[in-house]
Image (tube, rainbow, N blue to C red):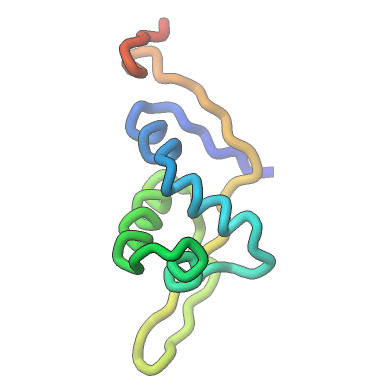
Length: 102
């Protein structure tokens, strides 16, 4: 079982963004890996906007690239969740919305 450790303010901000949560939900509910276009079509949101948020989720290892295809000269990447559970472990030095953890 893979646990995503959200242990910094940056990771917390990336992970808790409402649109990114929608993206994670779409991928979780899908029976097959999802491309940015598939997610974009499901959420009815511009491809470029979904692409940006997928890149942010990749930064914190919330998604993993599982397959690539070339379709009409375009590389299509397919993603799955890279975690089964999430563990929020605040960094002792981080300031979360005005609260300092020690």
